[in-house]
Amino acid sequence: MKIIRFISQSGEELSGVFNLETPDEARIIEGDIFGDIEVTERVERIETFLPPISPPNIIALGLNYGKHADETGLKNPEIPVMFLKATSSVIGHGAAILLPAAGPAEVDYEAELAVIIGKEAKNVSRNDAGEYVLGYTCANDVSARDWQIRKQKKQWARGKSFDTFCPIGPYLVTKDEVVNANRLRVRSILNGEVMQDSNTSDMVFDVATIISNLSCSMTLLPGTVILTGTPEGVGFTRNPPVFLQDGDIITVSIENIGELTNSVKRE
Ligand code: MG
Image 1 (cartoon, rainbow, N blue to C red):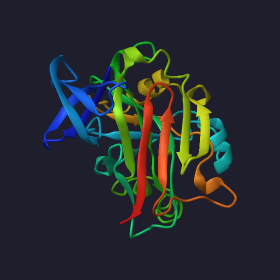
Image 2 (cartoon, rainbow, N blue to C red):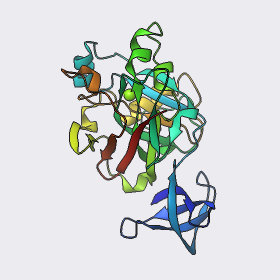
Image 3 (cartoon, rainbow, N blue to C red):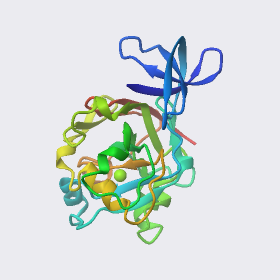
Image 4 (cartoon, rainbow, N blue to C red):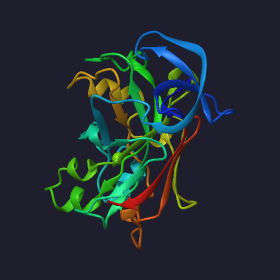
């Protein structure tokens, strides 16, 4: 099932089931996506996509693709390396990424598979980890490289937490529709040009390992979004570097998960 949150033509904020064959409308669902939901007969037209989830936490992994670690000059980590990204940075499909007034010059894209946790997870084994997944969506771990790398003594969170720096969506794909999350093509496309083209099979740590490992240090609450890291091809490692510019269009495309597209403009 593909679940969206959206604003309807009449201005209501609703949850619905999305169907690729009828992309302008959704069948309304009622209930709790972490418990029982009912798919009703009511159909509404989609005016604006909202983020498919309001996460209590956003956890992101650094250096989880070997070739990306190589391009940054850093080594593959021995255990997952995590940082937190502010929940206030979340936007949905179709919203604009803002180049912040405090640092507009080195804003970069990172295509990532996002895992959405379905129930509280603490000290979960790798074998049981799949039970705690609600589904998946696309994410862009937008990063102001000057703030991430140079201005904060190597603490990444601030450079990755500017407002609008966490586009997710367009919809949550429930796990029953995803045969193997560790074998999905992941791409980013900037103004029609493919910038990243890899596969989650290149991840250093797979989804089950990530959930198990993270849950040994913190409770993963329902709705927690885990960004699983980005493959090679990001802008700041290119020669010359490529950074997002006012007027750009950036898409994160993940096989069987969706295409998340956002415009870019100055704050
Ligand atoms: Mg990232």
